[in-house]
Length: 284
Image (cartoon, rainbow, N blue to C red; front, side):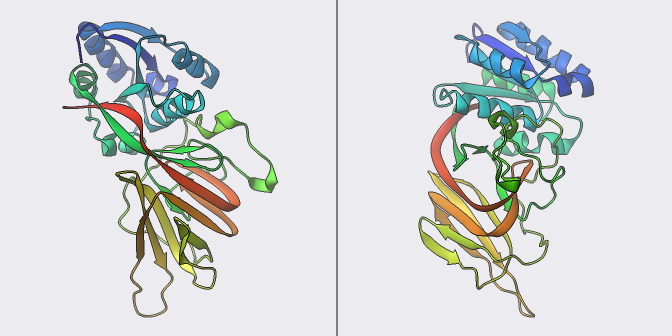
């Protein structure tokens, strides 16, 4: 990146409250290497306006995973995600609050992350988009293992409880949800469920086979990685794995976690892979 870059540095209010020192360091490093305009939004509406009105400046989000998800969601809804390139300086109250950014390859620490913003290169990454236009950067888990705030609607989708549609911005504006597992090795069961899981129209498991858990995540090259853990009685049952461009899960009411946000109950949800749909600046 050129030192003459013009940056719009959007500092999440949660980051300012939880780790003001890291925020200050990030501002100093960025300001020393580029032209910087700092934005301090106090609400989701102000956050959205800052990104929409960024002009030719390159957006830099200083905040946790929830702030990153919110920014991607805003640019996706504005239909400018394909042309925008995001940068992020992870700042959170705990390691779990920035686990997604770390898993994507963003350096840990305000100095290293800010230098990556100035010296790194854009990388195009795949994205999951569901049938309600919600975005997923990390993974989908059914049941929503390890999540907090069950019933909230956030970056990964919309809540359908009671058949009502939530406000679209709620899918990307929950800053208080923190717990995130990017690549779990095993889905911890919350009790067997009966679900139909289809990958590109091919049924991997049907309603007559109880399952302990399902995970879906971008797998690169325009495909999602799907893993289904059938319920076992006695002997261990091997998981069913597949790669697909489209994944549909349906059945009796179920909840799921998309990135850090729990959604549901729903009876059906489809996720499509958008290949190289968004850009993130990472170390060269």
